[in-house]
Amino acid sequence: MKKIVSILVVVMIIASLAGCSQKAADPIVLPDENSIQSVDITVDDELVNFTDIEWIKQCMSNIANAQATAKESVNDMPQVDDYIKIDINTNNAVSTLFVYEKNDKYYIEQAYQGIYETDSSFYEMLKELK
Image (cartoon, rainbow, N blue to C red):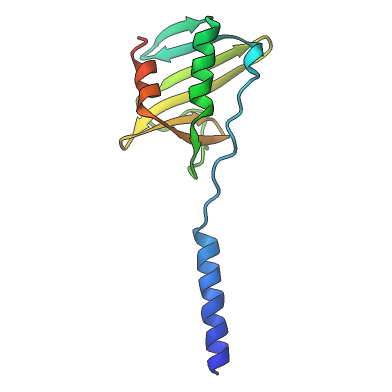
């Protein structure tokens, strides 16, 4: 009887640990930096277009450095009231990302791909563009 109880306890512990693990978001999908023609930033319904290569490289670096979270992106747009929209324009496609603050943390969301944590300086840089 002790052996059965011990086995059940071990199985319950393993099941608990397996249920607690959360998968991080898939890596953020960005176009090849050399194919980017421009980046549009929309803050409070005001659009600013950037074509400067150095600015684009810095922006892409900030996005690429964001850390994947276990939060899922299940909508076309984030479920917050205030967000910044980033459209990365290439020859044949537009990649859209959203940057926002929620509960004193800063996130980049790519629809149906994942939610990534970024730092406040990137958010503030974008916010000041308006």
